[in-house]
Image 1: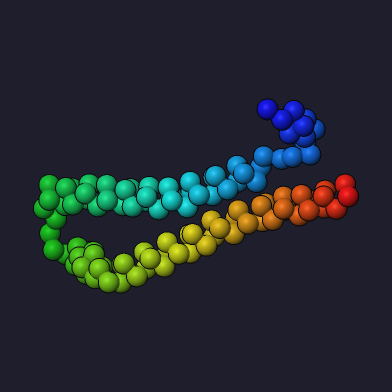
Image 2 (image 1 turned 135 degrees about the horizontal axis):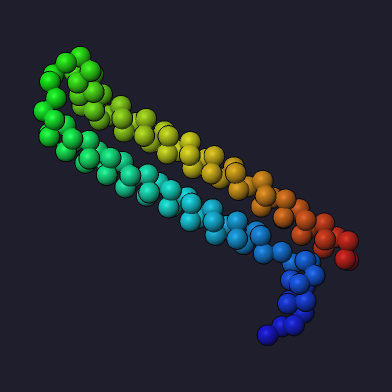
Length: 113
């Protein structure tokens, strides 16, 4: 084991935050959409069971709900756009601290040479 690396880590010359940020970013970029998809399926299943159990009348509210759910193209497009927006915001959220640590490393190298 290289003792110099451990010394740099303990003296904060080397930081672990950029590596942790990358790990959290990739876990979230993959995990959040999967969790939202699973939550949506569970919610849809529970609502369909509730509707079947209650035998809701075909009033105006029920008609509007069926019209919205029936238009899968619109819901798919909106869902995909929301997915892209979420992934973009997730990426931007992590780019700033990672860029900070990259600048820190570059400046640290410039001052030590």
